[in-house]
Length: 189
Image (cartoon, rainbow, N blue to C red):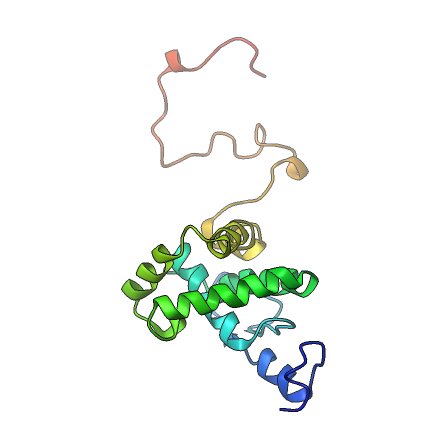
């Protein structure tokens, strides 16, 4: 395609193909639907290819599997890696090479491989810089956002809401009450 061989040139067709990556719908009954900007979400990539994005998405799901966590949350990992790759050509090269390694280790396309094949492929590259970069990005991209907070039941930071002492400090219904002897008596409010 015209302009596709030059990574600095963005064509209409290339943009449409990249924008088509990860188009999905969040179920209306999901508690996360209220947090998503709309029920339909799409992730446009600026640097990585659709294939790279698909592989990164599947890799993130393999590294941090949560059966009920919506794909939209995992797509944040791909979005963040694509944005970082746009600013750092060496990272873009690392990500493209790593997705190639994963595909080769999965004997085809990592994104369409069986869960066992994905796990084996991931283990085969766990000492690489690619693995380390994607894993570290997953930690922040997956768990530091409002959709993940809602999914896991995290209420967020306590400081803006007055702290925990007067807001939910002692509302743990799933733990037994500790014996009085286990609690200090000096210095409490």
